Image 1 (cartoon, one colour):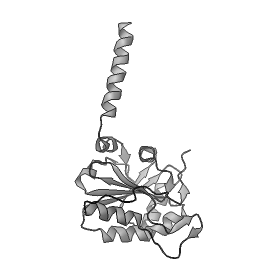
Image 2 (cartoon, rainbow, N blue to C red):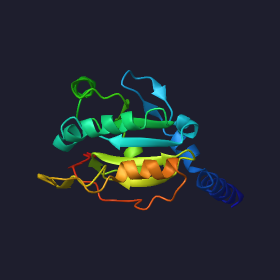
Image 3 (tube, rainbow, N blue to C red):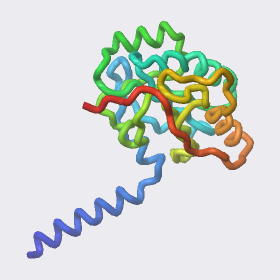
Image 4 (cartoon, rainbow, N blue to C red):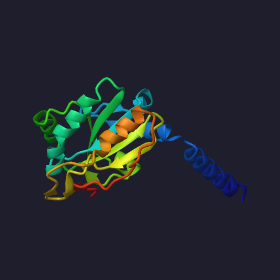
Length: 193
């Protein structure tokens, strides 16, 4: 009986310590392999005022359509200590397809695959393109659409009236509360099988 009690106690202690990890410790512990199979961590999130993580797919037309917007936003916030990371989830496209997508759309952000869908699961991502803004403590402070241009697949506004990602980043830089912290992303589903 004491062996069983010791095992139960050990499991409870492990659960307690895992639950006590900060968001930064949790996301930093996710093993990521870059496009060159080098293992990296996301621990540098603490070095930035904010980190924008965008899930993209080389096969998603809306991912293609939003690359210019993402490049423009990164340029607009250049020098303001905001990091931009593109994540290509799953194993449904090769490293060559990802490299071709990056080159074709001139993506200047950090570009990383998430073959094991670890970041997808951690952030509960389900769509490409979908953005997550994390503060320097690793907490998600905004998630969802980049703006309100895409209403639904194949349906787009003539004029963008809501700039969710830019508004969230401006609020962070001005130490203000983000007024819209979650929206529904429109795009292609992330394939998990």
